[in-house]
Amino acid sequence: QDAKSAATINGMPGVRIISETVPVECTVAEIIEERIETAMDEIVDGLIRPLSAEEAAPKTASAESEDRYPFRGTVEEVNRFFYKRNWTDGLPIMPPTDAAVAEMLTGTDLPPDHLVGEITPRWGKATVEKIAINAVMAGALPTYMPVLIKAVEALLVPQADYGTYSVSTGSWAPHWIINGPIRHDLNLNSGSGMLSPGDIANSAIGRAVLLIIRNIGGARKGIEDMGVLGNPGKYAAVMAENEEDSPWQPFHTEAGFTGEDSTISVFFPNSYSQVWPYATDAKGILNAITANIIPGRAGLFCVVMNPANAKLLADEGWDKDQIKAYISEYARVPAYKHPVYWGTRIGRQKNQWIPLNANDSQRILRYPEWIKILVAGGAGAFMGLLTGGSLNDLNWVSRKIDLPANWNALVKKYGRI
Image (cartoon, rainbow, N blue to C red):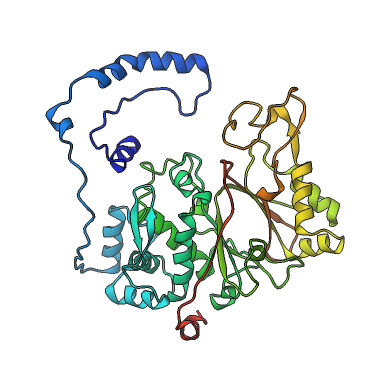
């Protein structure tokens, strides 16, 4: 199914597909050679056999219809209708009625047919109206529309590499970080349990993006999205930084925005762990971080540090750049535990080197700029470690959120929810 979808997307609906039995991402040469040999006759036949009449004139998928169809039924019937067509995330949705979508569109000054971009893997057209439809389904409020529009823009930036992560076997999930004054307008949670269910803004924004990816981008589970295990972070991984209780500059000002700007940032982790400090001082906090970084991974990395731990570090003279440099320098493993030693990351990261000795010490996170420090979370000692991807030219992507002219009226109407 994955191969057929990819062929159709790329304008080759009649491509011949040969099944083979080499295990996915196999590195054992003997197995690879043997399984290739068994498939070789079919491969040669597929290359030289004359085209059949059907192959010579393959049927292409019909163009996406923009027609609207009336639907009558109970909320339960609507949900079952949508679920059978893979238009939901498995949870109940709000019916996207004309009235509900019109109300959602009050959250932006852009016209409904404005094209924000085309989303892979199936290059669906993400118009403002289609974003609004999925926002309604997710239970979002009109005040979330400026955030969702910029979230879609962020996905389309090449450095985010969403095109790879949306279909990868690695089960990557977009992780969203929101900064600036809009945090308070939307009642985003930056404190205790911010990644837990229970806050409409954190939950609905993340869920709306998930539905946009599925319904507009066309990343269907087990067809285009080939995640081996899946990822619960795909439901709603949205954080706001606690800028007021942070001793350092906010996340978004590091990227060149002003403190008055509201922004949304994204990167794609697929692993999340929570660790506690080895001691309640800078040494205990930093050593706990460096000792718990996954040895077999090397890429974008985010430390979610609660205000108490951030203050401890700041009081001992540590700033964000010093922390990043420390983590990069001291999060090390013997070379034989690092993927570069095995050749599994060669060509995927710039300027990587293969050590001469298997026991040579090697950095896990070679570049400090891969690392971000986010201040958020509630009272306690735990810290969050989010491990992201490691492709060339990968980077953190941020976008400034533009507010509509009626923003104050919208906040007055929805701000108490």
